[in-house]
Length: 181
Image (cartoon, rainbow, N blue to C red; front, side, top):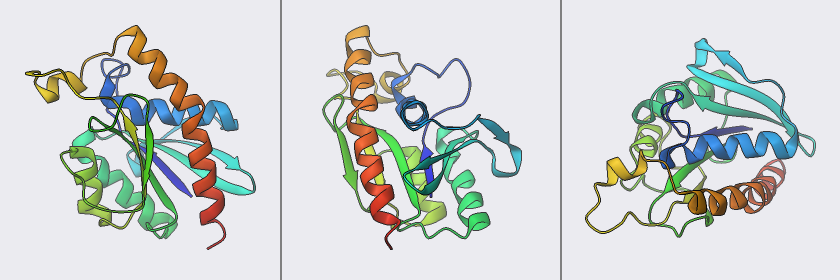
């Protein structure tokens, strides 16, 4: 099972809203006890191994920037001969969901999310994803600037709480359900 979090590499992006996918992976790594993160240049990603129940899982942080995330996903899906419809789960931020809401979507288009656009271009629309709500940008704000900004302490607290509780529950439910297929 491949679980890919969408985000941008580097310390300057680490705390931004747009890196909710990477922070989600860190939360899963903590909750389920993942192994050491290792850079895997062959896949353009950092990868950690862990188990959810009896299912081996690879947590994947693409080293490409957000807009090219699909390149890493494509390499991993090809190498592991993974079926994107049930052996791939993509975690991404979503500014159309309320802050801290985590919502499953079995497939579909990318909307305005450039990272999801890249994954769709490289893996098709048939992959499941968990969307992590950022809330809406303030009226008049430039969306690109807003998602690349750091959330307030209050927003971060709400988001982190969802990443420690709701997200692991939904991921575990998906992984264990997919292992039955």
